[in-house]
Structures are given as structure tokens and as C-alpha cells.
Length: 262
Image (cartoon, rainbow, N blue to C red):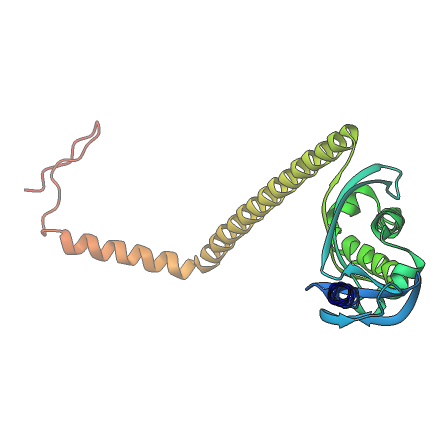
């Protein structure tokens, strides 16, 4: 009898321990718990920490709500029908307040069912609005538009877009050669334009210098009058008299000799 009581007591203790074990659950950091009752999703969402549940009837499905990263390579066509390969990195997270709806409507494979197709669709839709050259020169604008469209798509499925980064756009070899040739031609044209402007400026400077010199000559000619010539002649004679020693020359050059006044 005593042995039977001990056995029953042990069984009761085991049952209590089992029931207690299945009556509690713990939600790890960075997760939320979706409460399932006999397989049906309940409105209750378990946050991080310790929780009670009905054993054998209720279970908890953990879903991560941390920021997740998805990298992919997508191929699309530009507005001018150039094939473009883009490397995209997307950071997103599950809405902590809607993990039960996400699990009920989509399931745990939301990345392959929703995220990857949404990235591809958004990138192709925006890329088709720009030419290949604009995709290069307007990458921030393109990235912003892709982010807006992708964010709107993910929101419908209880996910939050944190950030998107288009790492690079890759084009065909023929297009790269065409871009390189165009850049070379533009650089040559710019160099020729600068040379032409330099030559033009130098020519204008020479014309201006010649005009200034001609103007100076004209002013000098205007200043030369009969009175000025006569004044200059008087000045020359005065300087000659200042140098004369008072004696007349006795001999002068030429075939006819001077008479000696002495």
C-alpha cells in the first residue's frame, strides 16, 4: 500500500512537472511569438520574455523581428532597351505588431514568396523609366524611387523596409565601349573649345594692343603742329649756340675750300 502511494505520488509529480513544462514558454530577444491554439492563429502576440499557455492545446511559433539583409542580382531593361544587371542589398524587418497576420497569410517562407519577387519587380519597373546613361548619372534618384515602390509592396505584407542600396549597374560590353567613346569625344570637343576660346582671347588682346598703339600714334600726329616744329628748331639752334666757342670754321669738307678769314 505504501509502495502504491509512493508510485502514485511520483506519477502525480511527473504529471505536474510535464504540465508545468508545457504550460510555459520563453520568447527570445529579437523575436515575437505567434500563439496557436489547436493550429489556429490567435490574436495574442507574445513579446520577449516568459509566458504561460494552455499545455497540449496552445503552441507558440517564434518569428524574428530583427533587421534582416537580402542581397540579390537582378537583370532588367532600361528605357532605351539596354540590358542592365544590378546588385541590390535590402535591409528589412517583420512588423512586430503583425507577426500573427504574417504567419497566417504568408507563412515562414516570406523571403522567397514576397521579398525577392518584390525586389525584382520594383527594380525592373523603375529601371524601365530611365535610359542607361541616366541610370548611371541619376543613381540616387533611381535608388529612392525603387525604395518607395519596394517599401509600399512590403508594407502590404506586414514587413518594413529599412534601407536599400544599389551597389552597381553593369551593362553590356558594347554599351561600355560606346560610353567610353562618347566620353573621349566629349573631352576632345571640350579641349578644342577651350583652345578656340584661348585663341580668340589672344587675338582680341592683340587687336586691342594694336588699337592702343594706333591711337597713340594718332595722338602724337595731332600734337605735331607748325608752331611745334618751329619751336623745336629754335630749341636746336639755342643748344648749338650754347656749344659754340665764338670761332667760325676755317675749313669745311667738300671740293671747294673755305677762305681763311684770318
